[in-house]
Amino acid sequence: LHPFPLRRSSDLLNDLLARLREILVRERAFAAAAAHQLRTPLTALRRGRERARNSPDLTRARAVLDELRLVTEHTGRLVQQLMLLGRLDPEGRADIDRASGDLRDVARDVCGLFAEAALEQPVDLELQLPPVAVPVLAQADLLAEALANRIDNAMKAAGAGGQVLVAVIESPPAL
Image (cartoon, rainbow, N blue to C red; front, side, top):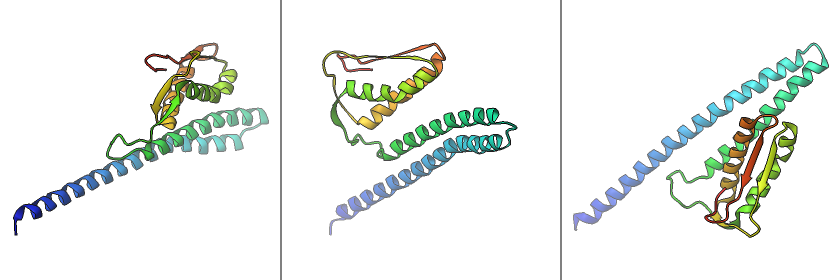
């Protein structure tokens, strides 16, 4: 018997176990971070519910409910982001499901999601698209979430009466 095959098998098994330990550590850290991120908006929802319930009149209760709507929207986006992050490969490999698509479609869809919020704030949300397709190879959900984060932050920074411009650049493909 040659000791090399056993040594090699032992090394491979030890490497596998070490990678599994690292994955478990990352998973625990991810779960802890997710719980921490969700704790704040859930606390705000609980407190807001009590404030609305104890409001002396309907006008004040409605104002609290409007605040809660914003917290709920933020929490929904946070959950969506956590779900997307949870689908990524824990070892950081580049095996994300990518597909061909048109960057203009992603920008159109995401800006459409913010159209109502832009009208309510009011923020002038403008979308500039080139006349031809802008092909990209990407994971559409992650790309859309990244763009949604940028638009959300830009709208908050712009404030009422501000302007947010989303432009799709043809070459090289960019937002």
